[in-house]
Length: 109
Image 1 (cartoon, one colour):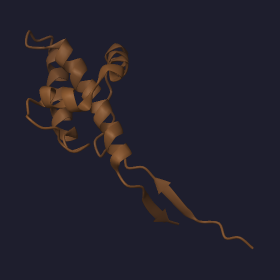
Image 2 (image 1 turned 60 degrees about the horizontal axis):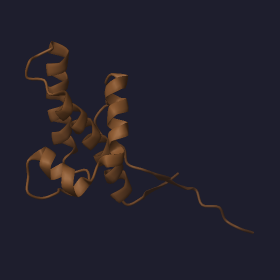
Image 3 (image 1 turned 120 degrees about the horizontal axis):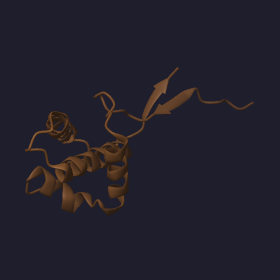
């Protein structure tokens, strides 16, 4: 007789709410994933010398993206579309990197 495991592996999810933005912005960010190189682009975007561990800078990226989104909604002259797209690219990439680097958590039923 074989025993089946009743262990389900769940991947961690972001604690923040979903990122709801215009479809064109999300499409641009998804297309930009192909050219994203974490070790090169993330320090430049964050204006730091080193690359933080995967997932460590998500709250900062989301805060900066929220500022850009508020500027976009207000149609402010300070809004930078290129930076906004780069921030969304970074958020998507960091969420993926955080999930990929996190050890699988096992929950028993």
